[in-house]
Length: 322
Image (cartoon, rainbow, N blue to C red; front, top):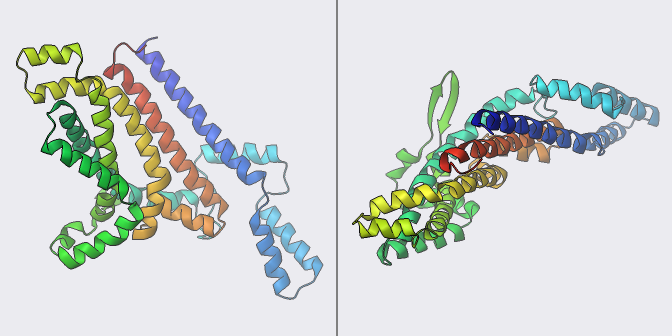
């Protein structure tokens, strides 16, 4: 299979997976009772009206949300709307879901991207260094970082870190303040504080990942040959990392999904960031089904695209992969 065929196959599979996720999300909403029907009925009855007015209010709500149409017709119409980026209107915010997500996604990227960058490269370098170096201070430091980073819950660190900075390192407040800027007309805000909290756990994970994967090649023949030729640890690390790159890329995609599925909800709730996680949390509390589906699809699509990118990078990292 040529690389072009591989790209077409993987992209096609990614598109199919996205539509499969959208279908599952639709079925969860379409085939389960709408909780807003109970709220409508309760609101009408609470106003002291009779049964006929309650029935009329429910019929009006069903007609406005196309709940009386057959499921297959609603699915086809919804599929067309989703494909044309018409994801409906938020019931709570009274605004198009795509407009809400267009503001929420940059808010999430403003700390997720810096957090991943702060954790990935330093974590990999430290993990490789501890794998090929002699046991000593570097290894003990890496173990300490891994244990502490993985042992501290993000929600606890997010609550404690601002207090520690305010009380003991006030000079850091200016550095850790949000920094807004605009890229291609899209407003972004870099948030160093949540990025630092996110990077803590990810950094510890990457140290352990990189060390475990690199340790498999420390006693390989090519490493022994390089050592016999007098190669220093930097050269050894470069060759070891090249061989360990493939599983590390796979772990990167997995880490990205875990960040989106778990960490964004915790950090955005604690720091009150109007991102995808916060919008999804509020949508669940407010029973806002269109926004719940929208935020879920954003996270699912990000995970699918990350996995697709990983598949496309594999032949460059290991030419033996067909």
